[in-house]
Image (cartoon, rainbow, N blue to C red; front, side):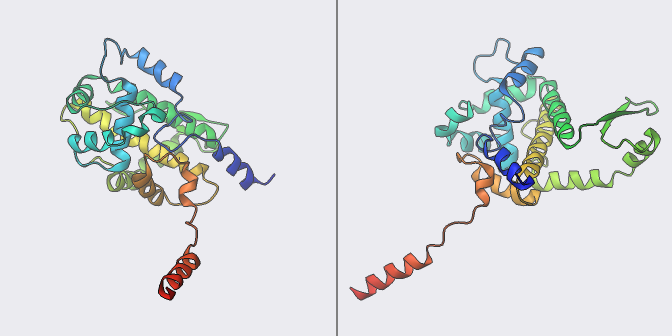
Length: 253
């Protein structure tokens, strides 16, 4: 079987669209992280999963405000069953962003990042960069040839990181914030990074080459459709002939 065919088969069995995230972040794994940080303890109205799904929706559809996010998200209530989600309320979501620990989303991001790297390479090394008066920086890399010093130096030349943040600012929602507390801002930034990783993983899994920007745009307009991502790139059927025949019949009569 060809490499392309294998990739198509692997991608064909994935769950519907990127918002479910069930392939990359299984529900049991997400719930384990939530339990570790007591995220759903004494919570009745808004579970961490619903908050996370709503914030991903915010990133990928570029909603302008908390009110805009909630009204737009809730208008898709018919899709909640397959998403495993519930209706959002503006005040409840705002409280969760301000009070629920950002560490839940940070750990989800770290695990997703580690999985993404492992999928690209079986061998991973960790490089710890000691910084004067600052917390040590931990780098994950599949570069087994360069020394730790060389890798640290490459990190300093982080032009690609600058390009990455430029892309994030242009395509995700980090210019305006849903909340003003430190916790709310951290949650939104981390969710933007998770959205970027999911888009990047989607790009890697596609059996053909498409830019991140094109994928992000298609996600924005088709996010709540029950459709596999690769199907978004199938060209529509050519109905020109049928339309011409119909027009001829109408003119004839």
